[in-house]
Image (cartoon, rainbow, N blue to C red):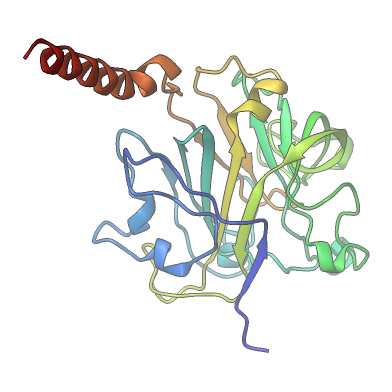
Length: 278
C-alpha cells in the first residue's frame, strides 16, 4: 500500500485575502523557504508561528523532557480564514507511535485551546488514531471531535522539568482528552511517513498535521469571538510541548460584504432613470 497520508474530513477553502489554506495533508504546503519554514505557512501579519526545531537522539533534552528528534515538537502555525481557525503543526513525532508507557513509547496527544491564556484549556480537539483505537492508544471520543468542558490527562514532568507521577504533573501541559461535551467536528489531516528537507536539520524526518475549526464552535465553548488565544500540543508523555498564540480574529461584517452588490444595484437604478429621461 503506497498511501503516505491519513485523512479525516473534507478539504476546506479559506479567504481570498491570502493564499487559501486547505486541510488535506498535502506535503507541497510544507515546502521549505530559505528561512526554513513552510511555504504556505510563512509567518506574516495574518499567520502566527512558534518555531523551535531541535535534533538529537533519545537522550537529548527537549522542553521539558527528553527524547530528541522522535519527540520534537518543531513548529506550530495559526491563522483565521473564512470564518475558520487553521492550524499547522510540524513534529518529529510519528502520529502512529504506539502509546505503551511500559515500553517507554508515547503516542500523540490532542489539541488544547486556552481562550483566557491562563491555563484553563477550555476546548479540545481529539486526535485519536481512529483505526487503532484499542491498540494502546487513547480510547475517548471520536477523531477530530471538538469538545467543550474538556477534562485532560497530563505528562511525566513538573514545572521545574523533573520527572514526576501523574498526580504531580505540570497542569500547563495537557496531553489527551479524557472527557468533555462533543459540540462538533474539526477538519483534520496528517502525514504518516517521515519527510526530510524541512526545518533547520534537513536530514531529520518530520510529520505534519493540518487542522481547521469553525469559529462558531470556538465561541460555543466560551471564546469571545475576537481576542487572541493559545493552542497547545504535545505527546502523551509531554516530552516536548509547543504553544502558538492566534492572531486576533476580525470577521468580515455582512454589511461590508454586501456593499459591492448594493453599489451595483444603485448604479443600475441611476442608469434606468437616465434612460427614462431621454
